[in-house]
Length: 139
Image (tube, rainbow, N blue to C red):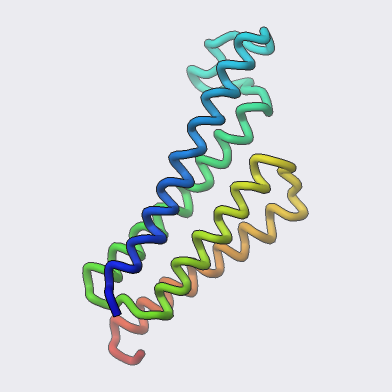
């Protein structure tokens, strides 16, 4: 198996996260232009309107779990422990997190958002557990 394949989910995850900055910026500019808030609100993000806050929160969420994802992928790659199972889990994480971003920035319905987040969370745990087992040589 080509170990470089595991880097593609990492690239996609990074691009999805980076792409969120565009609508967040647009929403912030729009809220200031429409007079909903003064630009100073965005200095510390206190009182940020929901129009832009949903993107801010989605970015924060992507970065929080993303750190563990990036670290896991890079650790598997660097240690030559990339397997089809880890590759599948990496893609599953990225797909589920992309769905999570969509829900977070559209309906933001917690009845849907929470289970999707938890699914991605458990995929990430599985990734790390499988990686740890592979490090021991048992798998």
